[in-house]
Image (cartoon, rainbow, N blue to C red; front, side):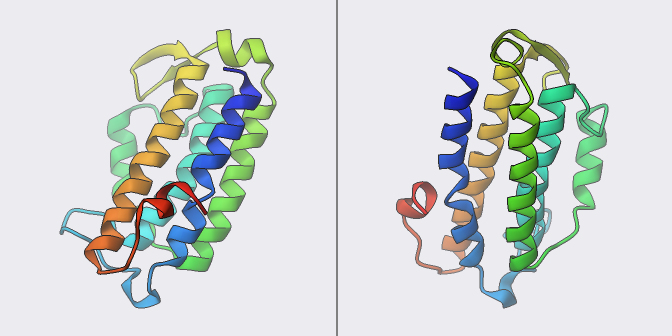
Length: 162
């Protein structure tokens, strides 16, 4: 897969996220499905912020944390955002993500390796880039199910089409 193909694919996966965020009723931003879960506001902040983390990590190996334990502790303190803040952070962090990955050559993307706390070892950049997509898609599906739990009418089109 070329870097350009990857970025086009991720564009398709990101595109429905803003409309999903906008489906959250403002009075439900602090709702969470279980006691130990993110609120919807925290989940939106996490999804948006992770894009910047992955961009810098993939491009330079700078993750902003050294271990997954450290990251999990950071996640416990994820601030909540409102819908407009989430939409803005999503756009800003995705732009940063694309800028970081766009700075790589095809060989750096496809053949280069980067140290990752997620895998606990050096792995190919393209594989970590796929993890970034997986992370986003998994949280998007989780967010979708939260909306369903709130009785908001959503269907699979909300996951794949904007």
